[in-house]
Length: 376
Image 1 (cartoon, one colour):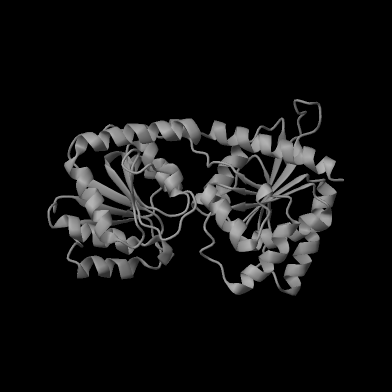
Image 2 (tube, rainbow, N blue to C red):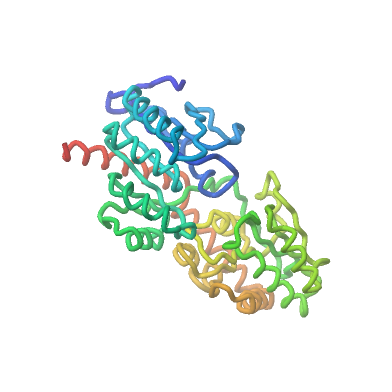
């Protein structure tokens, strides 16, 4: 249990429960972990609820972890866990509940409403590519129970507001946070030797196949370049076969999951993101901090990160030829590439530091709690 400390205004720290399906090394999960680890203990006492099997090594040390198993929400066990959470929220007098992903939002949203939790927040971090009619019907009942919604990009907010008919006045865009000091800027020379894509091969929406197809096009003129695929998943065998079919299996390295992507990227000059759907990519943030110029599909919040031909390059979705053409342009114009890299680093330092992220969340919580008093 975290020891309570007196807050700046003389009250006990605000109790906040973060609810997420499970913890893995994914973008949203790492944001949750980073947020919990960095919350001011004088102001906040964090708790973490996971409802699926979780890597315990990823659980922050400064919070109480509720490791519950809720394999099916719509079951007798699911109902029992719901009322167990209601009782726990009342007993602990939690004032803020913040949920991520569909199942966690369904469970935590209903429980927080029944418990009378003052601030109930659903977080949106993608473009709802997972949506189906059953999920949408359930969320249409639960989203209105929330007192507010946080997204990490304006495009994400707009999409959820339109798809689920949500009150736009309750929508707030708060940036991702990233440890700027962790990523040393590398000023690369004129030659391009290594290009990478970072992302697990578990979902077709990431479109790693486009990266391989672009590599096959570029390799015709620049066969010396090595293409790195960082990540793993059940689609790997299919993608390896594609590389073989396109005769670039020698140029492409399937790196797998690695513990330190930051260090690995020190020898990478260009980074690619080919997704058909994206919220606000942590991989792009890392590319831009590291001096790795990014070529990314113009989807979701990516245009809010990258200004085309200024801080990186944007391409249309599902267009391997356009990806290849942008890469070739960057290979042939090293001065432009180096200017982009410096401009990209500046954008992330200014807008996406953890200091900035935490300050905005702190203000959000303060405003939300004040509003909850006015709504009594």
